[in-house]
Length: 126
Image 1 (cartoon, rainbow, N blue to C red):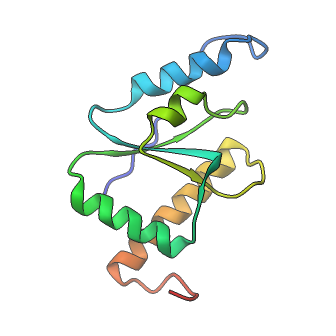
Image 2 (cartoon, helix red, strand yellow):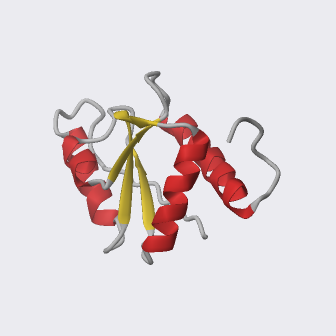
């Protein structure tokens, strides 16, 4: 597994009413084709780390192409992005800054890989 972090920036005013839509278009355009898209959104499915690890293992086993995790800006993700995603994942009902969401995502990816490879990192019920 390799990880690539590609921040996408849209050149528009912070108060532009079209900013969320423009960000969504830029995110979708930046995705590899094909890819399995996972959108991070508070309205998505919340799951235990062990469940996420099993789901990611299944995707890795069955899908030979890239998996892309998409995190929105301070406005969140445009509806077009969450609709285009194959999975919408939530880290819970709290609002997280996108930098913090990225950190939580990296930790969960490491935890998932550790569980899959038998590395003693995860402590808790399986």
